Image (cartoon, rainbow, N blue to C red; front, side, top):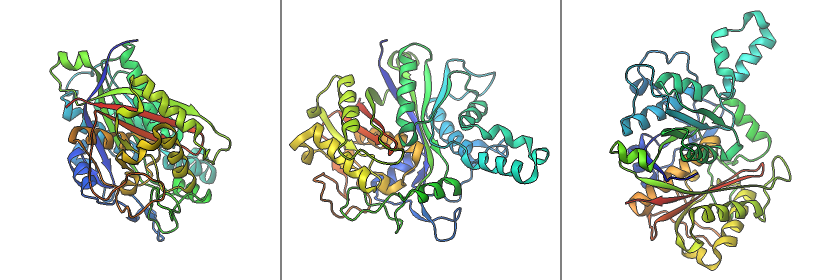
Length: 400
């Protein structure tokens, strides 16, 4: 295994913006995508993609059969393909161009609706046209059909860390020479099923305002969206004259579950994931210029991440700029890791880390701010830790 994997473009749609430019502008402007949800109703607060219409990006043809997850992913894919000049306009498409998508639930609303129809109305009355949306890899498959991506097509489902796992999985495929270019990231739709399930386990903020690392935090606020990077080997990007924006330098993962819904507050697994990522990147903790935290406002989850960061960085932690972007776009579940990675990539490109929306105070001893913070260094750390024991960390290198 050899070769460098680089980022040559991106696509994103979430509650704070459609497209990298709008996402960046609103993220650095301190905007918050959280508010009353027209979709969920009944006073629900969420980070919803409001008034979502895929037609400006996808046109009218074929979108009727796409559910919400497939539409979000297809839009992000369109953006990334357009940004990199890899759209497949004619013919059958490129067999070396593929997609790796991370998701927690996939098209769970489509799955539930189809199954419920079969139970209540009988199997003879279900709509067969809706069946393709009832598998977890449906969004990735539909996006591949829409954009003629004939290469690798994989779906990674690892809870809240799915998006980061997908980026790593795609990077490994490229290093092994099994593809020349891969879209990689995550997608998650907001729906009644996921909202109720998170509510039943008591992780949703009662007032609908996530306050990552704050002493009075009371839970997360669910969001949705999709973020994809175009990943290529450095050699293939150079050969076609594409500019490399970032490098995927290191990844680490560790599992320390003790319960299906409980963080290990001491952070052994999270610490191990970060240390593995640093080792894979060939750097030490002193070379990290900023941290994009996976903190969502969860009391136990944020405490665990604080312990892990202190275990790795020690006293230097208080001097490292930290951003907790889920305060802006919510806990987007399987898409969160990709959205956080995009946030880190922007920080390295701008040499400036985005503010943490709504931040007021914290007793965690972390350098959070409502203003953008200067980044001194070429490397960024992205954390993504799940309550099911999945822990992942990604190290990125800026190439400006």
